[in-house]
Image 1 (cartoon, protein in one colour):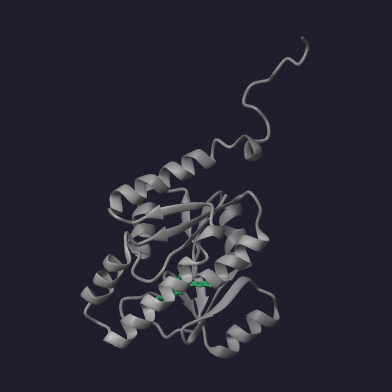
Image 2 (cartoon, rainbow, N blue to C red; image 1 turned 180 degrees about the vertical axis):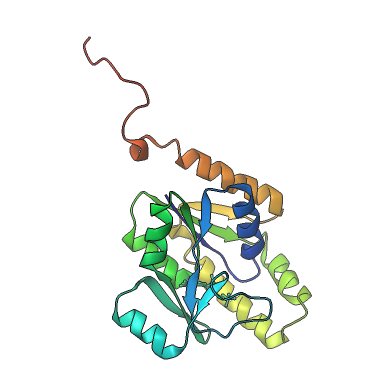
Length: 199
Ligand code: 5GP
């Protein structure tokens, strides 16, 4: 199983993923590679693998990425080796990636992919959340809101829709999704008990 989570800025994706990971030790966060400068409080190798532009170019040339995209002014990508290491260790990778990368992942993976689009409860609430951060100019917030409306247009491609109205409730629904996915007969393949096909 691979868990893909996409949602617009302000949907509360980071807290949602942090709570989810804390609740289920089998999940492992897929650390993306990025050319974005490190923010204060971030740790190289934990939040992202921070690389410069030539290093990112080399990884693209080596086809090291399952997907990559330019988001705002920087590039972000998911390395194939990351996913392989996590699945080899028996972990369920959790990918936090934007719609451009999400589409690439949706096109490559089959039924093992659990795709989730995380929604804010309303446009008014998204506006309120972005404004209350108090860190961004009105123009930046307006751009984020426009981008969010564009990102939501990709939601129909995702199998599950979760509205982040209340963090604990949204995480509980996500855990229910994972539990249901683990019961899928088409994934399990072999029934847990032997059957008798004679009449
Ligand atoms: P931030 O710079 O705020 O950490 O992330 C900006 C955006 O980049 C978020 O929407 C996040 O989901 C997206 N992102 C992070 N890692 C990846 C990645 O590996 N691939 C893609 N396509 N997007 C990513």
